[in-house]
Amino acid sequence: MPRPIVLGVVGDSGAGKTTLTRGLIRVLGDEHVARLNADDYHRYDRRMRREMGITPLHPECNHLDILTQHLLHLRRGEPVLKPVYDHRDGTLRAPAYLRPARFLCVEGLLSFHTETLRSAHDVRVFLAPPEDLRRGWKVTRDCTRRQYTTDEVLRELDRREADAIAYIAPQRAYADLIVTFTASRTDDPSHLDADVLLRDSLEHPDLTPLLEVDHGGVALVRRGRDLLLRIPGDLTAAQVTGLEESVWDRMSFASHLRARRLGEFTVGTSLRRSNSLAIVQLIVLYHLVTARATVALGGDPVRSEWSAGVAPEPT
Amino acid sequence: MPRPIVLGVVGDSGAGKTTLTRGLIRVLGDEHVARLNADDYHRYDRRMRREMGITPLHPECNHLDILTQHLLHLRRGEPVLKPVYDHRDGTLRAPAYLRPARFLCVEGLLSFHTETLRSAHDVRVFLAPPEDLRRGWKVTRDCTRRQYTTDEVLRELDRREADAIAYIAPQRAYADLIVTFTASRTDDPSHLDADVLLRDSLEHPDLTPLLEVDHGGVALVRRGRDLLLRIPGDLTAAQVTGLEESVWDRMSFASHLRARRLGEFTVGTSLRRSNSLAIVQLIVLYHLVTARATVALGGDPVRSEWSAGVAPEPT
View 1 (cartoon, rainbow over the protein chains, first blue to last red):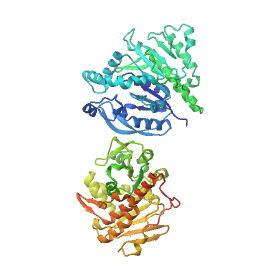
View 2 (cartoon, each protein chain N blue to C red; view 1 turned 60 degrees about the horizontal axis):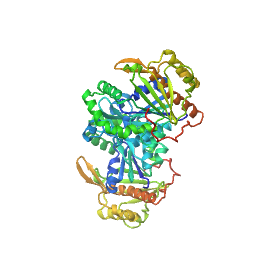
View 3 (cartoon, rainbow over the protein chains, first blue to last red; view 1 turned 180 degrees about the vertical axis):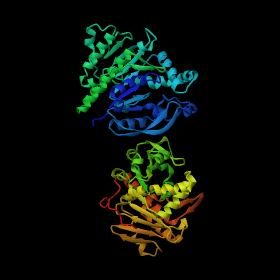
View 4 (cartoon, each protein chain N blue to C red; view 1 turned 180 degrees about the horizontal axis):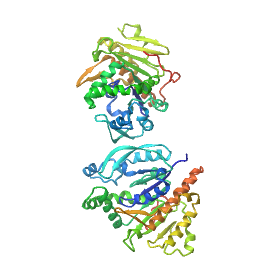
């Protein structure tokens, strides 16, 4: 069996990591994706962190060495006994046996923190929503599913700010895709704009032909060595279909995965859909299935590291 | 830093694994010994085992693949996040971070079950007390420290018998030292006899000169390619000293470890001492410090595997 393809999604707490990966996992097939949540590698539980005055964003608060070890085992196709952090009450639990699968999806706060960790990923996504949007998402999530009060979440956000700047933000420099959802035109979460910085560390699907015909508001802008894809949140169905078709055309070997389930997310308990989210997920999917096809043929996914470590310009 | 030296002590539940290793760890220094209890690698907790009708002696009831993985990491000098099984109530707990040390002491039911596991050990000890002795030890231990009733332990012993024969006993064939304490002359646990089969897979300290002078009841008997050391439980202090001196003479580079603390064990809450236990521990200690000295000089501990896999004759 060819080795698993590793997707890393990094971003601050509440940045939308699970929202991005959920749709990808549904398309790839739940049984074909092993999932690693780097939060499971917290060294201290919620109570201990409070007593010690340390935030989960600090590298010392996490078993990054063990995360690295487990990531390498899974990438080699070997199982691990992974630790379990229970977000509902902030405690550490008995570990769980995790088998490798075709894909490994790693969501984390710090999974691009070291070069060893970074190089264990085939596709690296960094989520960089504006702070006000992220704070709102985090309050909603933590109060409904993690037993925090609004006051507690806001205090926690303040407490974490310095570590977020020191440890989370710098990882942006090592991502292949930097995704920023913005509420510039509307607050409706189904119609957020998305900016995707396509860094030159990966070979992205060639989207330039798109720009020759009229695709409404989609724009592709050169940013130094990178390309910035701007996806407005108010695309028409026809515009979305055109864009999606052109990406699917470039991954015809994976057409059996085609489904209209990308772009789904939840607000409270109601299921919603976003076209810009669907397009972002589709671009990530392109990289995953392409890497998988390459590895299955005995090759190594193409990656150029010449600009790695150079922080991209802000979008 | 040279790689850790790995001691494996295998035997059925209650066979005396911890009693043997405790004195060794005290002499080597608690801070220099990483300890791995293979029971921590149980796949199911006590309640689940009961529901499934599976015993902890069955390989399927244990994450032997993960035990192997962790053992190899530690042997290479790398830390692991090891699972934790709480014997007091039979539940699985949050894992614990374990750093490698000079020595790694692995106590387990099944750690000689596969060739990969076996070959990860430098010194392999198998404990084979007579069943009546072991049953008595297990009842005392499980009722005082593991919240079982006598009836429960006896039922559990019956339930485990088939698996003990199928999976525990065959590992005897792969040990370097097979230790049998017997109550042939007295029931006093301080004066049990000990038979130690010194298998030819390791180079044992040459004890033949001992037999030329009068060392009381100590006997060294050839058993095929192996040697059987018979240590009576009623040696005089002078006889014990003579035997111990001759082993310490062969490990002069470790004389700073010399201490009179070998041979201690507990009966309930009272601390007792056994000369035969001390001598068994000293022979194991000899192999550990010799292997450590060899590895520290860039060598590999000498081991001959030609007879591995051939079950030794019963002592």
